[in-house]
Length: 451
Image (cartoon, rainbow, N blue to C red; front, side, top):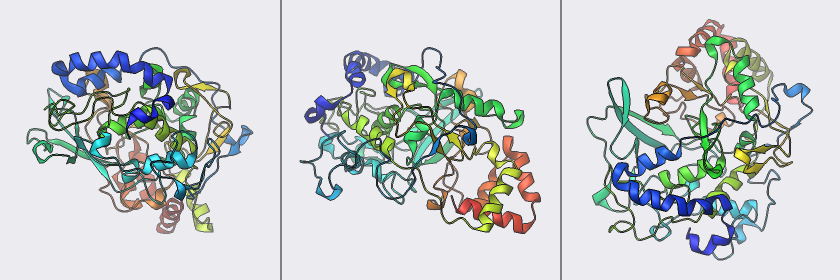
């Protein structure tokens, strides 16, 4: 959307970045392109805060269950708002309500709004809509690069190869030399407000409880709206984002090509500058003043967690086998969010009653693991993060029954095949599953089909 009509709604943090980033982006453009500028922005600063005491024992926490449902209704973080069908471009008010923010999440962007010039989708819902707005989908992004002396180097212009463009002259293509290639499926965003409100201390406590061979790696990420303060990442296939505003701003520029105060520089087309001032981009940067970024984040904060399917005797038995073979070591069944009033995200967000002290069942630890399915592409192409090349975030299994393309690349079609792909740190777990009698394997798969 056009930012000029929404400036009064932009967050103070986003506006504060406009002046500081515009000059940096302009001068650094010729030095290392937009990919290098963003790499600098992902550099975190400071030590992480605990964000309150660890909450790892759901049974003893006194917390309540988080609301669940595939119903397009708010979890209480924002009010429901006017009837969704009554909203249009003239009546929508960003940040007013769940329905207003959902409208923006679903709204199709145009070139006049800043779409492109290179992009993957024209709305958030294009990638996040199964079975309701905010879910996952079959849409995958394409990433490539190559190794030199055992170190990963991105493709020219960055590892992300956008699949679409607004002009035939600037469609990106994969270079023959870039022989590390992968797809990454769009992830579910339902319930992400609760995930954002998990304290750093809780994620570290989960790690510390894991057996040494299964122990995950917490990725320290930069909270963009906190000027880069450090927090444990939890969003994206590499847990590369720690807050929903950071996650939204990244997706807005990388998936739709719309710049914001957090990312004011356009992507290149395989290294070629195609931003404002060229024939390919008629809109000055930043194309969004930060309002849409916050609206997307608030929509996700307001969504309910994915609900379970029918619970049968086989499902209950399968859940026990899931734990017994070791799956629950990484796919953690229950996590408690931080208490209401807890300050998180580098001081920029206070956990509200609607999201605080809630029990969620994501079946993830949100940590990085090497289970033999890594795609060879690190979080960033630096020596310090090369070890993340073959690590992936433990995929949250809630909402699994709404997906028929599995694993990060979407190249697996059944839950059993997904289990068999697990190796590395999960090799022992996979072996334990293989040793189960056929009837117990069937029950474990029934459990997965209920998520």
